[in-house]
Image 1 (cartoon, each protein chain N blue to C red):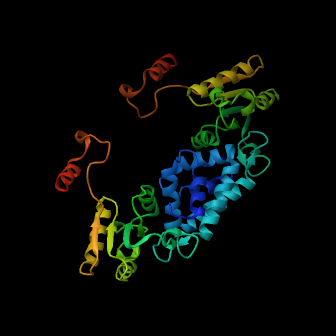
Image 2: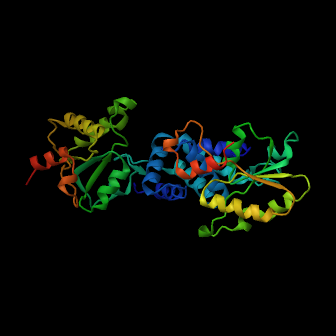
Length: 196
Length: 196
């Protein structure tokens, strides 16, 4: 694309975004340079600022700019409940339900042997130490219902066995608004078993 | 996602990339901050550098860092042929064929009334002036074979009528390696008409 090294370098840098190949990167570079240079500048600044200021919360590992994130600092939250999620986006989804008032532990990943990610990489030791602090009485495993998410939940449940805390998992069942005909059989089987 | 304004600002800035919605932007931000901060920094620098240094070639409008792009500066190119393309990516595709030794005029867009882009926005006046400089003898219209690309080619052909230059269009036909059964009927009809 053109003869300029700056454009080539920009395309190369854009390809490091997940899900962006060489054609998308070229299209993005062309769009930014031709139609939205202000957008390119603001993206440049946002990236630099985030890299410099975003760190992990000392208690729950989520992204924050302070030592503790606002959720961990909030004294009105119920510290006896600890919800374990994979990512800040999952935490955000739970928060939007307004149905949970406890605290979180954000793994910032999941156990995935194929990608070389084991229990150490997602801070399980820190999680286990936290759970045995005498305050937490229930750990809610809210990892995703994927193979890796289930494996991660299993490893955490094993590690917390016999530590005197209640361990629960998000309920599996039929999503609201769906028709049984189109729901997969494993979900229906779980919904049957967990009927109430 | 998390409680940090920097992360929110980054997601917001990433959404200005074409084809990126809020979910993709969140995933990109998480990936960069959690797994590839070096990539985030290099993308930030590449954006800033490109915005500062990339400009348009004075003669052909493509992206360049100098006054004239390397193609326009190359004295071995055949200045009697002028190929009109929509974007630097299209120019690059033609260059990779090694089948063309003339010069280019890059419209940096196409006529698209729905988006409010008319002849002025793609520099047609400059193109018409260039064509009547006495050097150009053939204009090859290589805009895309889409509705807007065809309309753009039509407008240019009309504007260059009676100026004493030959006007040609890239041949339409059956792509190499394809089976007739799967080629659309319009293409086959064109291939029949233009048979040789």
